Length: 532
Image (cartoon, rainbow, N blue to C red; front, side, top):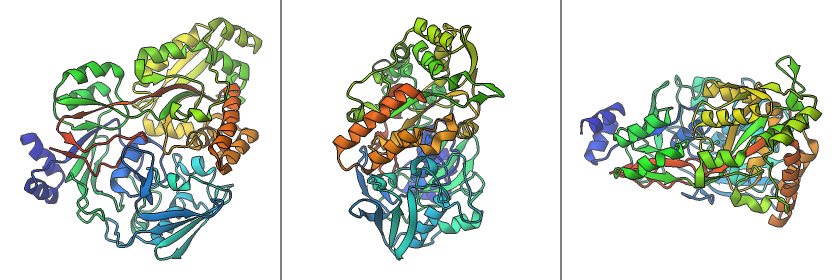
């Protein structure tokens, strides 16, 4: 009882009164880490997306537990005949947390914030998802041509080429709608930080962000979805260590672990505890090893610029053994970026890299490295759905590579800086991954190896980029599958981001938590969730 009263007090007096009157409790979340930013459109990491989904609404949303689009702030999204223009009809009567009006002008202001780098004062975040999905900002060769206000409740988005999945894109957690008044008040470069917080129309309102510790949210009493959210608030604690998260869950100090993933060796303890429940999120991800192909790295010749060296790396790593050891029945390995649910997009003649150390040594000798070389390998400092515990996986790969003469220097750093350096192409090789945002292979290919990602690995293949454009324009699944098969074959040879695993992430909750429906997309708004 004392613990519950303390948690409610942290949310503020208003929430305390409402919660006690309803015999309700705030949801205490054990997150793997804090957000990079709460600035919508300026992030690409799961920690940021989870929090943003609680404070922002999007133009569209996904039905709980699925990849099916449903209305949200937009009542409808209608493309023209060839999907080069989309008309969004908006919901009226909605207000932001600061009581300003949501309308077409506000939506246009958000597009400007995300995409229009021709404006004075535009803030270009190193983690922005915009150039990954739309290939460039407005000043470049962006897939978006223009955004126009039609009337008070209609916005038209014009594309430079057909984009049949644009509705799904704007249902993703990246594009929450921000209060333009808050942007103006705090400044685009500072908005969404711990000092300025964030303002949306969503189910929860940000009350405070204690850097390195927690974010406190309070239920939006004027939420347009009447009767929601079902919890009076949320306390999002940052607990980086997986064992510590599990211990806090079993002690009753947190109610759920909805982000990242837990190592699979924690499953027996979860099953043995009657007060907690293991939860598996549907598999919809890929964890990969990226190999930087720039000609020089660190002032010296980069061996990874040679395709034979990259193939030697692929041949030296025993992927099947690694996945069997660390994931068991909850992970699979293949050579393709899209997960198994999209196997219709795989080539007809499927293949994978064969573990063969002797062949790897031969390839290194042919490439001019008979004695091997030294390579940096960066591993993530946080738990993610595809790599619940990246360090031991990195150590295992390092041992495999050492066996063929490639000496690996393992490195890591703060998560925000890690993502910044990936984007800037500062890592020779690194571990990262992707959880799908919508059910189309383009959502795996364009953000991971499209034109907007060329700086990350030095990979620039106009032929492949053209195929991605062709697939986006294709009107039949069969045609799309044929094109993506060609894309997969090219990437198999080029070895840019070598797939290691597709996993079913292990999460967990207290038995007293109700209404949580984990979907395949990595995280979800918790408007139906509450603690009994």
